[in-house]
Image 1 (cartoon, each protein chain N blue to C red):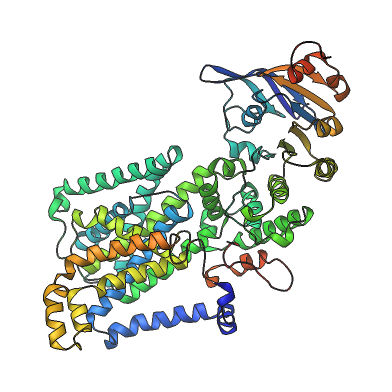
Image 2: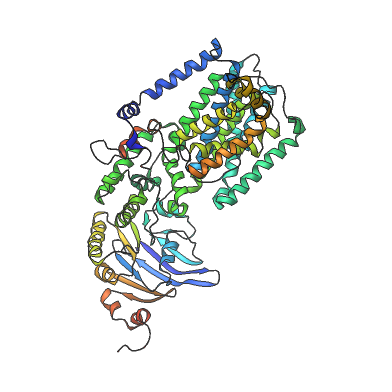
Length: 366
Length: 256
């Protein structure tokens, strides 16, 4: 890959100041798009889902990618965040009068999820791999059935009529915050501890890494942002029920993590974006609109026998695509690599081989 | 007072007695070797000292701190560093990160400062990068800082493991078969090197080794183990001529 990079590309990568500029432009666009209807409502909705999915993917990557565990609990944390935030905006906070209170509700959802993340971290001290996967799956089922059995929060019927408080700027804001915080975490002693645990847990303990503390923190940060994403999600969808947060939801996020590549923030962003957009592109109406230029002779039978059934077919196509990715591209788009812009300059410099600036390998020399 | 004092340490794996009544007093600055046939319980003793296993009975004290019952990272933070018989580097991480990780206990910033990259974060990170690169340059690995650890040649991996152990800023260093897989020439270099780091870092060293040349060449005192029991203990000359030791290593009966 590296030898194929052109000089222009190398130059562009070196312009680190572009990242804050891009974020600022993103913010302006996030305000401008809904204000001036630069895109239609549907595309704005997809943009919000992309943002929410980036938050979910980056946060799950911390546990499943960087730490090398296999947690299935992510949808559970999301549910806790969604229900906490939705109940707050429905029943507690006067958001109708003060819409500025909405971020508080989302934050509370994140904190509630983080608190539960601490509990899930405890079994991870003792078990790893498949066994932890089963425990986190059990946790997901517990969350779901607890919600189903509390009538006060709608039980299996869920909460309808949630106010549509999630806006594009808020999604953008939380996406930037989650990426920034997870990136900061990864490039700190705790993040290096997380990587060390993935490599060799006993050796990292013997190299003074407090593995329990590191796991607590990793699970807490991961579940916090899952809760944030849940809160935002509830206020886009405007209706939540326990069924929304089942194992399928976790699987979606898992796919985005492994498609984008483990232990990579850039990969998570790409994976979430590509997967979300592709899934939307495979909707019958979208495909029909895209292929409308075909002569009716071709289009009509295609529409009759294929496009109209895409709602079912896309659930075959996407997993099949994932199988192919795993077979021929097992590390995903960015597995174990990172965009240079996300790596603190201090880390890049520290990994340099010589004084000529021949830094080797973008991320941690991998 | 002894730096390390192990008294009446016993350890069982199920019904199997791996270590029976192990006693050792290590004075600060000493270089002591543990030898013995395979399965004699040598590495188990390292694992007991560093907290990987919890001793079934007995006490292990570092100055006046009891180590039995402490977790590995607590013991490591008390400045006990070690290497492994079969190299256990963080294989997929960079050479620099291998050394940086071992600074964990010395880095003083809170999780909040880490999440926001604020406060002490910057200063502490710069400090450990500098210290890591200093250690790497001592071990002639600085030009490989960004290389993935698993790509290093065997000898460099051994050196990196010692560099990583020194990043803990140990007072007591445990070396588990540092000469494994080395040729006689490399062993000579290693002997000089161990002597040098001992002076330079003011270390007390306890090492396990099968290479008699190294053990007899640099250890001031040698302890011989067999089946979890101490067979003999003393200076190299005495050990070399001890009939019990010869028997354990060469087998029973008169030779020739």
